[in-house]
Length: 263
Image (cartoon, rainbow, N blue to C red; front, side, top):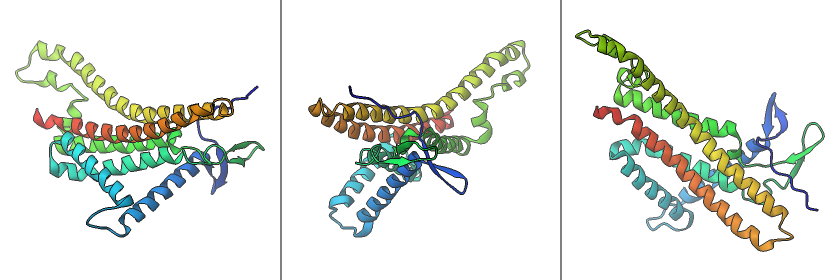
């Protein structure tokens, strides 16, 4: 009978460096970063007026994202400010997801501390620490945009609705509206936090589910050979879509944070 071992929910520690545990997720992230840097160096080493190969791929990605960011922001000057961030997020997440599909991820075992074997490499996007960190960067950029574009007091005012009680002329109606306005501001605050959590868990959940799917069909490979190939191609597509979604949600949240300028 075939024995199925699904990946654990979190990365597994391999060894320590200066008291810091290095996990297989961290090693997987380093591999993805090295591949991304190598791709960018190759694509920009000899720039041509008529792009070919990796330069052509990179230019297509930049042009497509530029058009989408311009459409969302509706302001070319502001779009140019955020394009480097959006492009970096897209390429980083894409290489994180695709690197995990390379031979060796999840199959090369390492004797970790405690005498048990664990995979040496694992997708960095299956580590909630990393997805929370990336979502945290996006969250800080969104809040900073709101504070700068809208103004500190006006932007923070949508989270703390208590000013109605101090409107002139003084009235009982304004005082009574303080409670529902406060609850409305609390809802806005919860919504902002939910964006941060959703960004983190959406990427983590989809990539982890794909990892489990590949393990299942990899285990069944001797029995159902034709089934593994389509699911592998599916994970390539899912990795691309998740990178795109993460980048696009970031720019959409930035746009929403700046909308209060119209009020």
